[in-house]
Amino acid sequence: MAKAPEQTIYVLNGPNLNLLGTREPETYGHATLADVEKLCTETAAQFGLRADCRQSNHEGELVDFIHEAHAKKAVGIVINAGAYSHTSIALHDALVAVKIPAVEVHVSNIHARESFRHHSFTAVAAFASLCGFGIEGYRLAINGLAARIGAKVKA
Ligand code: CA2
Image (cartoon, rainbow, N blue to C red; front, side, top):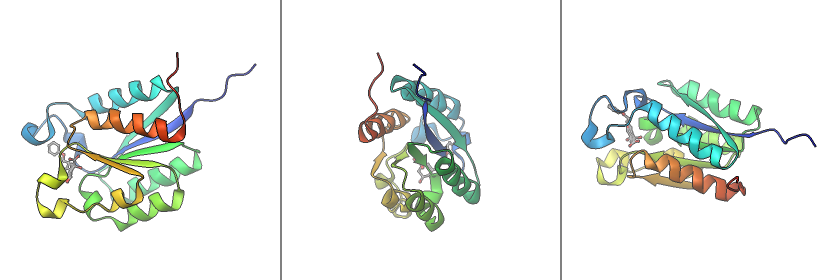
């Protein structure tokens, strides 16, 4: 019998996250974006899912990725929209429009930082939000997303 095609989740990282591991290690740790993407690919694979990892410094491109996730029938989104989390109604609206289960991740604990980081528009559009776990938050997000969509660990 033909194997079912692999289901895809999108892992979206926003502005400045390409700098992870190169500056401010006291806030963001030493892991790089490449480390994050490897972690996501490996975690998703445990559930038979493919992680399509994208990063952009541009708000509109992140909106386009969310639309693309819908067009390609992605089964979930993990999003760290960086500073756009705190400002972007466009990203909020895109996530709401596509109705794909989404988890928001922040590397740092945004609630223990400046007050302008305390509100997140993307968190409002996501079914769950994680912050303060460092890059481990991405693994936790994919585990939670898998549970939400009923993806089981593959033998
Ligand atoms: O903690 C997070 O993951 C953030 O989304 C990171 C954003 C920040 O604006 C959010 O409030 C919280 C900033 C990403 C900047 O990333 C850098 C990483 C290393 C060095 C410089 C910036």
